[in-house]
Structures are given as C-alpha cells and as structure tokens.
Length: 336
Image 1 (cartoon, rainbow, N blue to C red):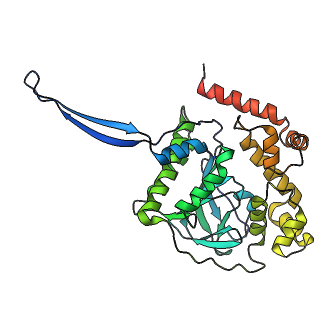
Image 2: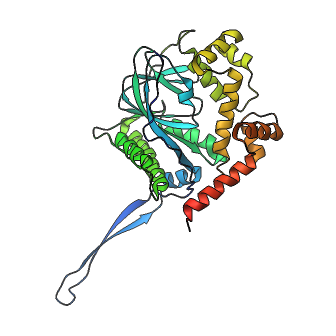
Image 3: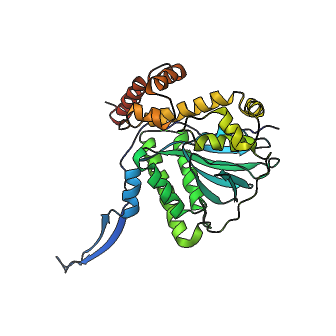
C-alpha cells in the first residue's frame, strides 16, 4: 500500500514579517505612600531583549507551510520537500535520514530537520503520524550560522516534549490559525512558530535534548529513494548529475530512474529541477537577495538559464514573481 499524506489546514503563508521579538521580563514593585487615605501599589514589568531573541530576529525565520502527514507502507519523497522543517512525531516510530546516518525518533519527540534531512517511518510496513511546519532562514548569509547553532542546541536534532505536551499544543494552535485564516493570522502564526523554537531551545537547556543516540545501520537496499532525495537536498547547490546521485547509493543510473518513476512519477532530472524551482520561489520572497545569487545558490549554470527555467515552471520571470509577492504582501499589510 502506498503512502498517503493528509494535510490539515495546510495553507501557504505568503506574507512576510521580518520583525518579531521574544522579550525577557524583569519585575518591579513600587509601594506608594498613602494618598487620600489609600495605599497604591504598582506592578511594572520592564521588557528587554535577550541574546536568543536577537539571534532569531537576525535569522529572519519565516514559517510558510504547516500540516499533518500519515505515512503508510511505501515512502513518497514528494511529501518531504522542504527547506527547514520541524517535525513532531505523534505516534509510531520514525527515522531521521541525514548525512548517511539513520537516527531513531520516538513519539513525543520534536525534531528540527535541515534541508538535507528526511524523516520517514522506522519500519516501512508500519505507519507513523507526524505534525510538521516548514520554514526558512530568509537571511541567507546567516544560514550556516543557524546550522551551527542547531547542532549546539540539539546534537541529534531532537528534543523530548514535556509532560504537558507544550510543543504539540503550540503546533496545534498554529494549525488552528492557519486553517481559518483571518485578519492578522500570518503574524500570529509567525509568533507561535517563534515561541515553538524558543520552547525547544529552553527544553534542550533543561535537559530534554537527546544527547546520546546510536545511529541505525542502513542496508544497501533500504530506504533507497529517501537516501537519494536526501543526497539531492544536500548537494542542491552543486551542478548535480543523475550519475552522481546513483554513485552515492552504489546503484546504476537505470535503477535510479526506476526508483524515481515508481515513487515520484518523474525522472531524477525533473525532480531535481522542480526542487530547485520550489526553493527559488521561497528565496524570491526575500527582496534583499539578488536573483543572480539565488541562481548560484541553487546550482543553476547561470542566471539566464535560471530565469528561463523559472518562467517555464511558473509562467513568469523571477523578477515579476518577486514583484507580485511584494505587492501581495503590501496589500495584506496595508489593505486600504
């Protein structure tokens, strides 16, 4: 039986909010002397920034898609296409495939997955239910720094939820807001998402991060399609060839074609191209990144080839697409 995916309230969150603040709170108390026969008390909270809030602000994180996946039997890599992702395993056992390793992820664990990683079921014959939220680091210059921080906070990319399941609660509130979008929903979702990340970091510092984990050996024929997709993610900025992907798995190009046709209904070349163009649409939402730099980041031979491919994929040029996004966001922020 093939995998099916269910997306509850999955909506693209197109508006862009670069400014958010998580603020530490200091408590002040003042006792006023008796005035007109009464004693007055003032409770005042001084709000100040903190290092984590400032760092998240400079990363310019943007959540753009949230939902639920119920995976059954065979893998379907198309459901794993993402930039960065937070996954929460609701039930079942999963595997994080990353850097030629398979790391177990148990129910009640939240895992932050970089673009080169894939979460799949631990047993191909058993289903696993996960929540997810896809996000990006819009400040491309700080992506490497963000990855370094991730491994400092979460050595194995994951953290255990607490007894109150606060991480699950925050994800479900994000779903509720995205499912019935109203005025201000996009900003509420972004703030909830930042709260989710901050909670995960706090839990890691409180000893909830997974610090010891034994990778599971992967046989040469196990999870081949997911490993192929993971390799594509990891090398998407290179001039990637089908032969290179096949060689990384020690299989023939013909067999790789068969795998992609069976699981994605398209050739490896089309999968790679569509993934690059999928990422391009997200990068174009950041007006500070030149189109030429986007083409280089995504492994296109030159900006002209990128523009031609993007026009064929979307029906408009990258510059026109970016302008449409900016105009749409301006209307959301200033409806009058």
